[in-house]
Image (cartoon, rainbow, N blue to C red; front, side, top):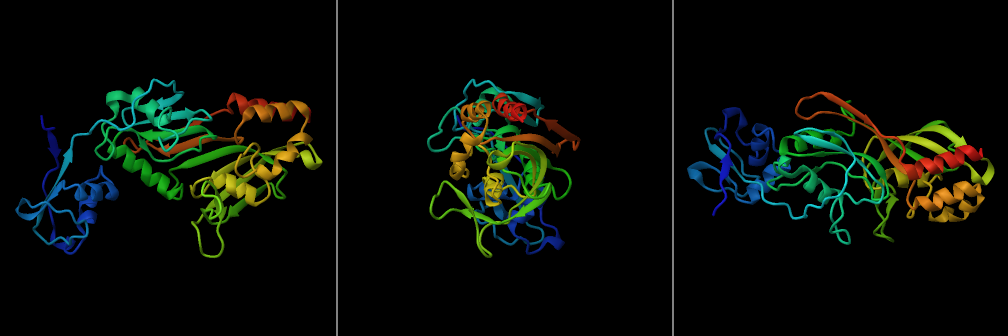
Length: 335
């Protein structure tokens, strides 16, 4: 049986919109869909124009009086399968859900991680409350945390929430709506109690699993702000607790930036490999706690944003998880 479709009200081009690209015109009139989602619908043949002809070219220039119609297919079942994985839900409503992600959980299915991910767990947890992201019944991932990073993460349940949250994360807090802060235990002590790391990032040409600092005008703009909260030990065994805020949100940004200034995150398997010998300089309880951690000591501790539908300001905090808390306590007790 063919799936039923819902369609938007017909959209008529006004004189002042003459010559505008079709995808831009539709995105300006269909609030719940982003321009990228509109472009995907155009390519899939879900937009009709004059004489009800299907238009598959988003660059088509509209003319005054032309009538266009966007037809949305019913959400289809998600490709990832639902899995009954326990989640630490911090907040949930009809539009979004905030999760305190445990370390070692992958956010999205990928090569080598087809199951056991946060997406698998969310599909099972949210069920019918997922109304479809881009025509697919799936959670809308607007930002990610590395597998070894724990902490707060917000996920959209529908297109409208996905669009609103994506806009906030795209601006990275420049408009004052989004706030994110991380806690990290790092090797050494920064020279200044506060600072800004401004260094562009790019995929490493020598190791495709790593991100590196770009030279010259290459790479993507990346800025991290840090604040020194505490310092433990002395000499070669110094460890610091930092609070970090992102001005941009690049892959591995905090980890690469901290390694770049000589203070990599404890336990980081990619960017602190040259500091493995320093583990033995720590007091024995801290050595054991770090070895038991088995990941980078990085936690997404604060998350604030404007609700994309109600426009209410929401703010959440997450305490250090047990593994990182035990490392912190061992360092604090020893010094």
